Length: 256
Image (cartoon, rainbow, N blue to C red; front, side, top):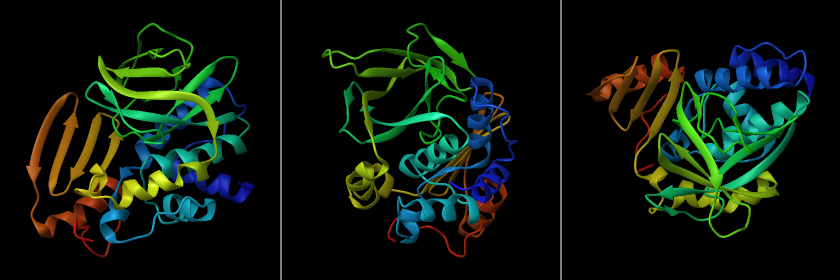
């Protein structure tokens, strides 16, 4: 990522350039990303191609001010962090469905190595506001909830991440390239068995909670209070614009 793109990306986040690649700056960048760039599956329901090529990701997230899902958001964020001097590794994860972990490459998360290893994730929707210590086994609390990282059964070095006591995902330790996630990204975007193809979703952290638009249901969480409302068709495009900064010319449809 060149200097011009770094400047534009930081401007998209409303973030200042770190003086040095330390954990305080990493925490600020992660929270800024979560509050500026929505987790969304709208491309799937607009009939848009999802590409993991660097230029396509930058154009979508930064130039067109859209969001994306884990492969897009964490993939591009890894580029920014690397350009800012952080040591970043792409890791594959299996998302839990109840007590059972899903397939490998179900999720993409980031390991950032400073004096200690950190888990960074801006592509899992409702998750931590800041980096989590990968080598810590005690509970870790931040604005996103209470998290705990423990060794997964099997003796392979995998780690299980829980969020407020519920299974989140199982993280592998082997490093990967973004292209390795391409086949599963395609499956997530096209398979009728993928939960991403069932209905459009757009969700973003706010200063006081979270805003989510799932199909036509607008869910607002403010200071721990949750309200829900089903929008009519005329309200959908303004809702994407006003709540997420996303300007669309048509409504995302599950039949796209």
